[in-house]
Length: 302
Image (cartoon, helix red, strand yellow):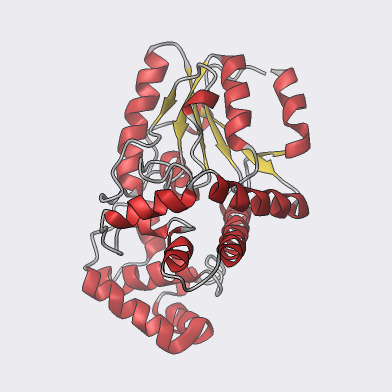
């Protein structure tokens, strides 16, 4: 199996061992690793984002990790622009780009192109979110389907984020999100990619997530959040979405104890992992699915 001429994509739920696998793969195929995780771009969130440590890089070059201030927003478009440049540069040096992460939208933008939807004003977006809270998921989804019939059977009634986004787009632009999608195209050809989705047994993943939550606390997550809070970053900034910030902030304000912090981080991370798996089912049907138990076997075949 010759992967050296490909752009290798590695996706899987959080705590599934993507980073370790990508380093092993990079050694085999003369690769360099590009981050595809929306939280690992922030230099202020090393522990909470579970960013790979430089001491673990094993002389493999890593790109787009911990380079951005948490005070700045970072969109899929921002990531795509930088990533395209990195891919071209890596290939120019006769090496293989390996993209690793758990942010599905990044991979979608790279492989299918970025939808050029006009910016929707924050005030308008807040109104849609208020409507969602007022109606609840079922009634909101019914209203969405009447507004935009194209979303039916494409977006789950329980997918809050995508339902709200679809409603915003149709209401503001008078054009379905799926009509916007028709006009998008990737810079790269379909055959340029080799796509790997790491499947991990749910029960074992839960154990790993629980252990990682405890590990984050022992490695200094509380101090990391203290420093983060001192930056006085606006709550609307992307970095505030990192799991653990609110939980540790509540601990620092003496609202909960440390065991509750660990429990809440574990629960939120498990929920996030479940959303990642759901995303893969709907958007990564044609990816090469490899069980976590078979990753070493896969490496031997290369």
